[in-house]
Image 1: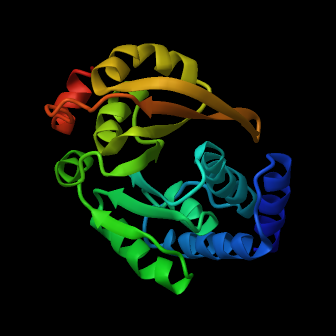
Image 2: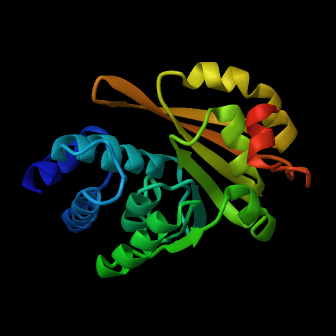
Length: 233
C-alpha cells in the first residue's frame, strides 16, 4: 500500500493533478480491495502496486483535466472493476457518477465496496444499449476505458450525453488512427472533436479525447451491440 500511495502521489504531482493525501488513501484502499477480490474474480491483469497506481488510478484521474467546474453528472460505460469512474467519484466531490456494466457480479462487488470506503456512486447492471433507452441525453459526460474501438464506443456513449456535454474517451497510442476511423460516427451521432489531452504514463502517452455533443443523437442509435460491431458507423 505504501508503494502504491507513494507512486500515486508522485505521479499526480508530475501530471499536475491535485490529489489530497486523504483522497490518495481512499483510492489505495479501493485498489487494495480490488486486488483482494481479484483472487476470486477476474477484475484486473495488473497486480503490482506501482503499476496499479499508474495504470489504473493515475490513468483514471487524467479525466479530471477534461471536467468543467460545478456540479456535473457522468456515466462510466462498461466500467469493469470501476475505472475510471471510481477514482473520479472519489476525487471530484461535485461529480455525480454512475457506474454501468453488463456483468452482474462486478456491479454487485462495486455496490458492496464503495459505501464502505465513503465513495458515492450509482451502480447499474445493464447493457449500454438497453440503459440508453432509459437515460437518454441525461448526463453531462460519458466516459469509457478499454471497451471498444472509437467508432464502436461512440455509438454506446453518445446517446447518454446532453447537447453541450461531452464524451470523454480514454485512448492510447492508436488514438489518431481511431479518430480518423470514427469521423463518420462522430458526424452521425452529433459529436465534434474539441480537444485531445495527452499524458505521459509509463512508457507511453495516454490520451483523453474530448468530443463535444453539438446536436441530439438520432433516436435510432444505439443499435444492438451485435449490429454495432458488425457494421460500425
